[in-house]
Length: 181
Image (cartoon, rainbow, N blue to C red; front, top):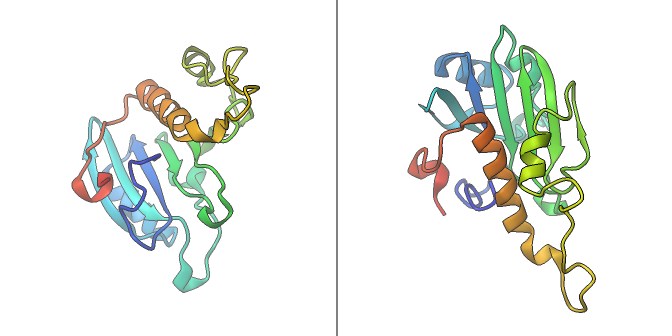
């Protein structure tokens, strides 16, 4: 995510998908059905996982993957969109879908603005990590010369840890191809 995947797939903007309640074979088949060939995949800690291109440039397909459709039949997916538009400097995002529905979506740039069927699904964990709520603002924001952007990667890493801890996601390294630094 923050440094987990940056540069691991040169020339690719990728998403990392964790799936539970479906086999690795089903996950990769469904991604291929959505025209997203997995670049790396495996299983760890009860989760199937895959890394895929955000877009299919060869087919001029720049639409996002319909993860709701991907996780039908009682399955759930956790998706990290690592570089939603690196050229425009959009921050990463997170989506949690279960049984064909988006339960929670948030942008790493503004985790206090969440959407989905249950935007408060992770609120206790986000509050505990000071990512939302009254203690989430940078204490040094008003200091002359301080730029909150300088600790953005640290903030993103805290967000990833909170999400990964809540879902008990496998920890890096999943494989050297995915987690190369």
